[in-house]
Length: 85
Image (cartoon, rainbow, N blue to C red; front, side, top):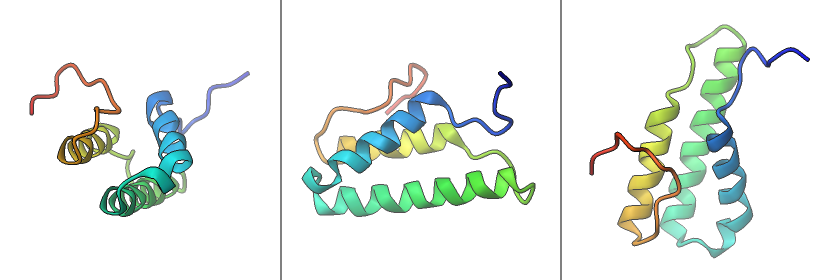
């Protein structure tokens, strides 16, 4: 079977689903900011698929989610070895 032409990295897809599943248990600020980031990521991905934009910045999404986790005192959701706090 052919690879998708506009793939979402597996770790990003997994965390987006995970956040959706636990959103009711998250602090309000985190949940709202995460929803905004996810909406922006989905819009960027859609534009990329339609040829109206470039590939989403997956690493910026990872870093933003990890930064939000850090602010809330939660464990990071992405393992980014080269990421420096």
